[in-house]
Amino acid sequence: MASRDAEFPVAELQARIEAILRREPAAVWGCVVTSDVGMNHIAYLCERPRGRNHTGPAVLASIAPDAPLVPASCVKLFTCGLALEVALGQDAFETSAHVCGDASDTLCLHPSGDPTLTADDLGALARRAARGHDVRRVRLGASEEAGYDARHEGHHPTWEVGDLERPWAAAPSWFATVDRNAGGEFRSPRALFLSFARRALGLDDDDDDDDETVHACEHLENLSYDARRAAAHASAPIADVARACLERSDNLFAESLLPRVRVGDRSRSRKAPAGADLGEVLTMAATEAYGLRGDLVRLVDGSGLSRHNLAPPRAFADAIQTALSQRVSRLDWEVDAARFLLDSLPVAGRTGTLAGRFAGTPAEGVVRAKTGTMTGVASLCGYFETHADPRLGNVAFAIMANNAVASAEKLRDVVDAVVCAIALARVSP
Image 1 (cartoon, rainbow, N blue to C red):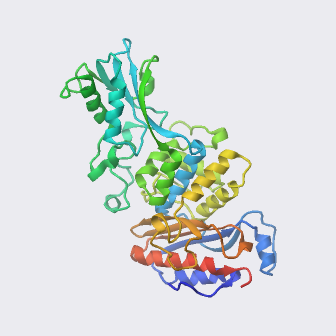
Image 2: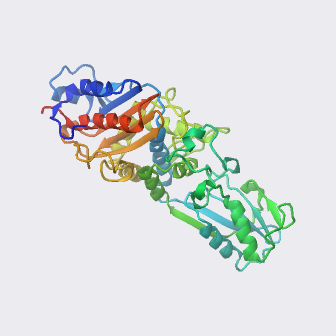
Image 3: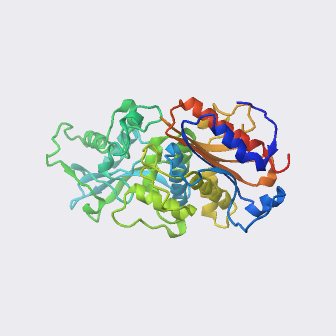
């Protein structure tokens, strides 16, 4: 890839991108590049016919911009952005233990789906909860309010085994994890807490689960109303989890953030209709928040690991332009959520999953973007923090390849060449 090509008029960007994508014809490509200055303004600056009035972002170049494609990990843009809108970047995952029962002699655990939870955290929680209480029994509870569901302790049903073997695959558990399921071993926080709490209480750790000392509780409302919180463990703020998720493309963190998503923004957050699964909630929230076409977007998980996810390039570019506009919103929660999202994206040639890409190119240090990679799939969606030509305003882009036979490295080279071409475009070189 040429690192310092000559600048060229933005009017030639379409032809340049088409030529670059022809380098890898054995793939289904989708691409869109937009500017927030408006179509008429761009046309005026380029001394082209102004055409009809257009109030949305100016489309500087596009190839199949509305084709529903598998976006891979770019789905995390939606998951993290929407989770941040509700959490405002301050909420945390809280795993708690409660003393309940008619005689206040029962200790219950309420998991929260905390992806950073460790065995040491659970052990300390059990010891704190047992201290000062006349507890004789231990049972396990699950909080629906926190988005935890014991049925999700395993693979998402649409994840393919071949993808799970890849280094970018999520850990073998969806929500409930301890020590990030190190070594690929699923360790239920409920089972571990049971063991730690029994030990702290001096109960026999070898008791059978059907013994009188152990009772199962599937939902929070099944516990007595007088349950008192005995102890709690809080994770780092949701904003920190989201930042790590985007920088490292952490699938486990993304799936843990997914239950935090609600339909509507922070000021009018509401739950999805009864019966909707988490993928449907994410789809509804994304289409509403970013003004996307619902018939073109279908999301089934939070990490993008499922090949059942479908969304067009325009959806990601529009979502990024929405976040860019919200950075100057009059609503504090919008400003915070947008800044957290945009500032958490990897920087080209510097951080995260882009640390090894774009070095020595016009995009280095000025592009922030989310990567997406699976066998036969490559995507990159992001924006220019500072484009070399400020007259182009905020420039966002989304580049996606599906059904490719080339290696991930070759696909990345093509995608990176497109981004560098965008960096070199000028209204008047």
